[in-house]
Image 1 (cartoon, helix red, strand yellow):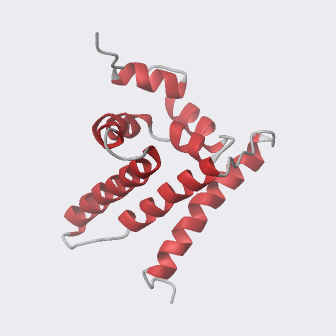
Image 2 (cartoon, helix red, strand yellow):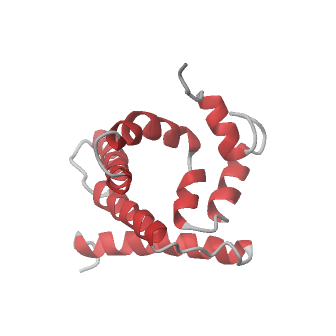
Length: 149
């Protein structure tokens, strides 16, 4: 017996409402930004993309590598796919999202390893911390790539 979850079931679990339902986007933003840790932020962020990444990248990688490494590689693949999409639109090679998303993957792994939790704080503080995680990884990526040098 196969234990697979459909996309609509996955989205309902993440958003609390069905795929395409009213307030789906609001629920996703509220749940992800208000998450009590950075790994939980990513648990709720973009459930459709997360479904396909989990099913086609992370789970297969997890069969032959440690889960923390599968997480980082999944973020790397997601970044590479974002870079590919932007490269096709701009019609030139863009390599920005791959290192940025990889760094966010490392932040997820480290925050889980060190059990960094801020779930006891009010929603606005949790949202600010999650935005700070994203913004700080973005700034590090920009400095490393020389965008602000």
